[in-house]
Image (cartoon, rainbow over all chains, first blue to last red; front, side, top):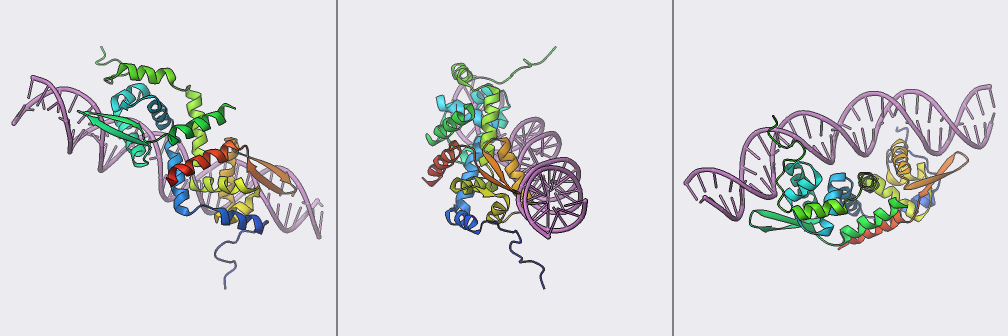
Length: 118
Length: 118
DNA sequence: ATTATATATGAAAATATGCTCATATGTTTA
DNA sequence: TAAACATATGAGCATATTTTCATATATAAT
């Protein structure tokens, strides 16, 4: 004999709103993808990398110099940005040049900047 | 007698690009603000809260029911979103109704959604 | 071939984050 | 005034994230 419904024992004040939210909710994988995408921007180091690459492509050691952090740290962050498909690279000799994968990236950053400047 | 320059011992391949990046760089406090702003979107629970509030205002227990997480957890996340000025609330009796602070919030979410759907 | 350069990567340490639990606050109702 | 309800909050735990350090890989130069 259970004391409560085992699924959700929360009181619901507005059934309709909860239902509405459920109906328009994104699928779990979309939410996961979206939050991953935003995670890329959610760290000062990565955000500075993104901003720097808006201008022109840069190599790892340029970025390390600009950011004043270790090349290893930059490389780890770039891997993350690569996995999230926000940056791509091209090799020229021993140097890898990184650039932004597409312009949604800059546009999102620009829009957010507007927000915080208001 | 130091072995290296104590500021930055990185080799720089493209002085000009590093310089360019430095010149167009945002101030430290803007970078901090921006990354904080994005941090709000970088968690599935908060993202779902934001999406739910795009439709209409909701109270804490509605959100808890929709998200199927504890009201305490929702409340903690709402505090964070409040501190980041992404949501505001209004009290009606003992119920607090939350809504998005402005429409930059939805626009950023929408733009990012376009990105991941491509 | 050997050495140097540019970057990548795994493991571990330092830190940050998200949730739970217990308790506190503010509002309404009895 | 007391009890009930909606929400807030601090402390602590579990997990995740970011960096460092040591080492590995790929390309170029000697």
